[in-house]
Amino acid sequence: MISTVEKVLFLKSVDLFSAIPGEVLAQVAGIAQEVNFEDGDLILQEGESGDAMFLIVEGEVVVHKLDQQLTRLGVRESFGEMAILDNEPRSASITAAQDVSCLKVEREDFYNLMSEKVEIAYGVIRVLTQRLRNANVRMSDSQPPE
Picture 1: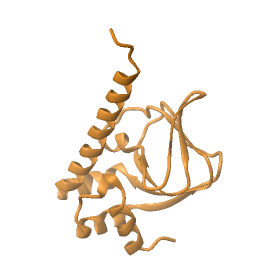
Picture 2: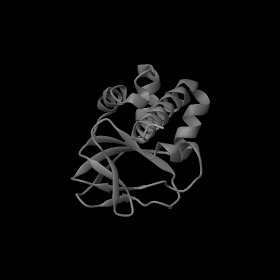
Picture 3: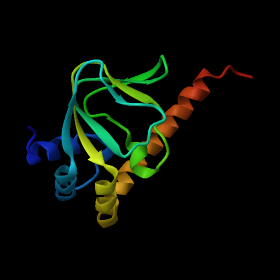
């Protein structure tokens, strides 16, 4: 079981929350639930409704669409954060590549906290924007020159 102090220290090390003050992170830690998955467990299914995000404390997951691996995520990385912001179906599946320990944050709890602490929303937007920029760079790097 992860203590609140350990959760705060962990959250501070995650890009999504790195710029957020400690006292606000204590509130995030209060709504984060520890969940565990075994190697091979399907954690999220592409197309299903999403209502939570996950922060990897230990282990590694594979992000995939059907049988195509998109990427692997490990400690201090997050997945499912788009579900925090919209009600769209999951855009990919996530499977545990080994035993995984995560902090799970439910959308409703997160919304309530974001309405009180706007800096949390800024952190999420910053990380998602960076991911989009990185994806655009990867796409442009793979395009042949004209």
